[in-house]
Structures are given as structure tokens and as C-alpha cells.
Image 1 (cartoon, rainbow, N blue to C red):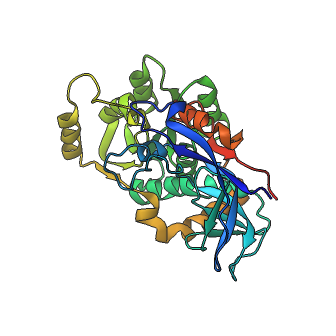
Image 2 (cartoon, rainbow, N blue to C red):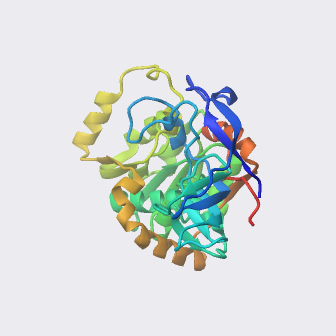
Image 3 (cartoon, rainbow, N blue to C red):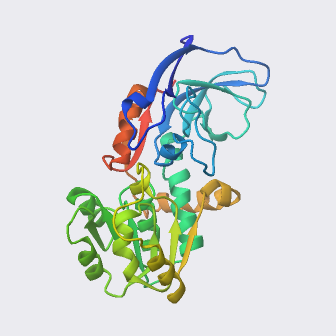
Length: 342
């Protein structure tokens, strides 16, 4: 085993869209273990849009990454050394060890995946935070009913693809919004959506209105911007809007051009009695993870859920891949394989 540890740290805070200069790859020595500690070797690293917010020092629900600090991320790791009585070398765990090869842990906060999990990287996607976000946001806040129309943007992404499929399981009409013909075709032909609209189309609003002839009962919001502009007039009375992200705005340095639409939104919320609720998945629903895990595992085994993973090789490629994620270049849940399994 190597005696060094590669780390990707935040070199500077981005202004607008992140660049490669905002990251720095450095090598440090492996720390020695104390009694009660384990050494984790990452195998899979999750890249997710929320990380853009952690690169900023603006006040948010979580502390920002400090300059010179390892970038945050969920990881799937193997234990390569243990001085902990309850953890065994070779065991797989879901951790939060960040953009680096190795990390030490006292075991707190780790989720054990066993010695030979069938698809360990799934713990970062369909069985992890994105799947959990889709499940609780749609079912607890969205509360879809059979026959209702559910719209989800970023429809082939890690969260959106799960939202649409769960909505179909619940008997809803599902309209996706995605970037490009290939993604839209995948949403319909593979994920089973009723329709999918390319958000790059000049007539997005018109196409969406035609697809949602009975209006929109649930809109799962993870994009914002022009997509929400097209959705807002179509929301039905008593519509529900789970709000888990606004990826179109993460790189913004100022308010969008055009008239102030806040009063229009407030009017819609009032007159149509619309419920719009933001949520942070583990803060608000962490106690319900076992419920989700049991149900999602059953749906996967029954073939009711299709999961697509976008796998990138090499820790050193994480910054470029993350920048591409914010530009919509990924197709499926973006995961970096940092190392080969032991």
C-alpha cells in the first residue's frame, strides 16, 4: 500500500462558473492510525450539484469548504487498515471522505455495505442521496395521486430519473424536461416517461403546455430559470412543488435579466393555493432512510426502476467532470472511480 495520499483541495473560490484553477491536486503523507480508528481507501466518489454551493462562502445550510481544504463528497470506500474492534479490513462503507484517496475515521457516520456488495457504487446514486431525495421529495411533499400530471426537469439526471420512475409506479402521467434529443429519447424509451421536452428548444413553453393538457399537479424543482418560467403558468390549483435544487442559478453572479417575477409567483401561490417546499434530504428525512432503502431495493429487484450511471475513471479527472456536470454534460448519475477495489 502506498504511503501517500492524493487530495483535491479548493484552491480559490469561483466567480461564476468554476474553472480548473479553482482546484489543486496535492499529495500528503498517510496519517498513522490511533486505537479505535480505521483507514478508508476510496473506490467511488460522488459528484453532485450541491458542491458548487459549498465552494462559495455565502451563508447556506452547511459550512463552506475552506480554501486549501479537501473538497467534500460522499464516497464508497474499503477499509484497508483497522484498529477498531467493530470494523474489518476489506469491508465496504459509505462515507463522506471527500475528493481524496484515503481518510481516517472513528466509525461515526459510516454506513456499512458488507464485505461483497453487488453494486457498491449504487450507494452514491439510486440507493443513496439522489434516490432518497427523489423518493422523499416526491412522495412526502409532492404526494402524487394516480392520474395526476408530474413534471420533472433534469429528467435523466440522478434525481430526476428516479422522480419520474417513482411517479409512474404511483400511476401518474410523467413529463420530463432534459437537455438534448438523446436524453429525451432515453427518458421515454427506457425510463418510461410519457413525454420529454428538450429545454434547449425555442418553443419550450409551448411544447410543455401541449404535453400538459390538464395542467401540472406536481413539479419537482431542481433546475429553476427558464424551465420554471415555462412551468409556473401551468400549475394547477393545489399543485405541489418539492424544491431540492436550482442548478441553473448556481453559477450566477447577479439576478436574471428581465422583469421581477417574484410578485407573479407569490400571486400564483396565493390564488392557486400552491404548496412549494424546500428540503435538505438528510437534515429533514434522515430518520426515514431505512424505509426508503427497503422500498427502493424491492423496486430494483422487481425491475421497476432503471438506473444509469455515468462513470469517470481517475480522481484527477474529478474537477473537469464536475464542471461538466454543472453544464449538463453528464448522462446519468456522475461517479468517479478513484481506485480499483482491493
